[in-house]
Amino acid sequence: MEFFTGILAGFAALAQPDILLYMVGGFLIGTFFGAVPGLTSVLAIALLLPLTYSLDVTAALVACASIFMAGMCSGSITATTINIPGAPASMMTALEGYPMQQRGEGAKALGHAALASMIGGSIGALLLILVAPLAADAALLIRTPGKFALIAFALVVIIISQRKSISKGLIATMLGLMVATVGIDVMQPLARFTFGTGVLVQGIDMMPLIIGAFAVSELLVQARNRSAHTVDLQQVEAPPIRRRDFIPPWSEVREIGLYRYLKSAVIGYLVGTLPGAGGSMAAFVSYAEAMRTSKHPERFGKGTPEGIAAAEGSNNAMCSGAFVPMLTFGIPGDPTTAIVLGVLVINGLQPGPQFMDSQLHLVAPMFAALMVSALVMVPLTLYLLGPYFLKIVSIRRDVLYSSIAMIALVGSYVATYSLFQMALALIFGIVAYFMRRQDYPTVCLLLGFVLGPSLEEYCRRALSISDGNPMIFLTSPDSVFFLGLTAVFFYFMVIRKPKATPLPS
Image 1: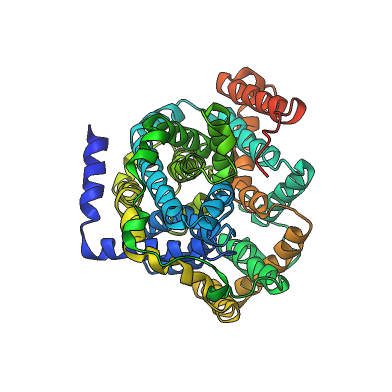
Image 2 (image 1 turned 90 degrees about the horizontal axis):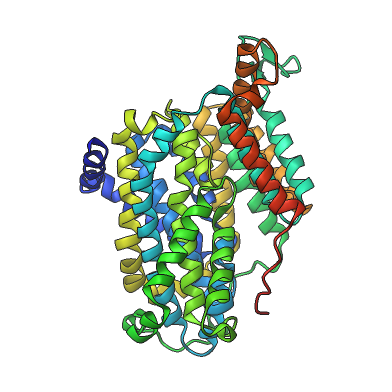
């Protein structure tokens, strides 16, 4: 009962003018970054990260939550209007939204996307509030060997989720683990891998890695992409849009059915709890399931609101699901929650089984922001600003990206007041750029860096408990459970690969 009282206090905190301002401002920033192709909510929060040193923790977490939700749902804007997904999770939406745009039904497609985002995001936030206490209680049962096995399970899932090249995912993860070992040893006050350089004794900060891997590398990718030019609005054929055009017809909503919205939200939430899965996998799984069970599968790929509802409802519910492993185990569910974890660490907070009990006054406003962003801000923003969404893509890219470059590098310096850390951000950006050119996933690099210290610490603690006997990992019930779960995931995702669902061309 005390937990839900704290949640109500979190909703009350949003009524404070300063907190409300950060939520609304974060939502508008997330909408902008999600709608512009090449920019994502990950980049938005990465740029916000240096500001968290001067912000109140509650305000920072509320802003991050609203950016996350807005960035996820606004990716459907350009996916529908110009067939360029603003976010990777909106690729499935583009399959249905753009054909509707070509038929002059673009506003209605955006309305269906907003409705599904509202329902999916709200259900995901509700599930987060209901399930979080149970997950925290379950986390208390996991002992040191089980914690090592759990983090190992998370890393394996992250690697094998890179379906195109598991080997490249493994290499990127190992590189992140290696970078995390630089500095003071996690168990003893000894410096390691400093190469005789005093500036490396304190280790490599999370800030330059995040800004370099996601902000600087993205700028280099866009600079190389000559086709990333400004879209001429005169070339985009679209009839004049009125605000009432964004309201989906009740007949189509009823045809989609409440069950479809609920099912997509649950799928997205469950996928979100898997480390490294992300919105793209949630949208794909939900879209494929909707096409499999639809009464009219032949409509998919030709502009059906049912496909939009499945994809958008799922990827917005994923936002809440990704917070479960991050808050209870310190294991990020996706790149965005990995950066939110950085916000907590910067402020001296370490997520774990007792985190939500001891810091409920901090996370409750964040839960409330997820709910309010989905339930209120998504439909309200579309209704008020919908006719102007198309103009976002007309912004000059040279001005946009040069401004972001300046913010990223100055932010990395202001965060630590260290020219060395700023130089590291540039170095990591160049490394991540070449990794992306060769299809190495930078998210594996980041999550390997984040989870590496905990993996090493729990492994060495478990071995010290057993006097160096590794059999402790096979005799502890919690460890055996997660090792078995790792084997099950590896079998079904690598050895016995699931059959690819044929998507409409």
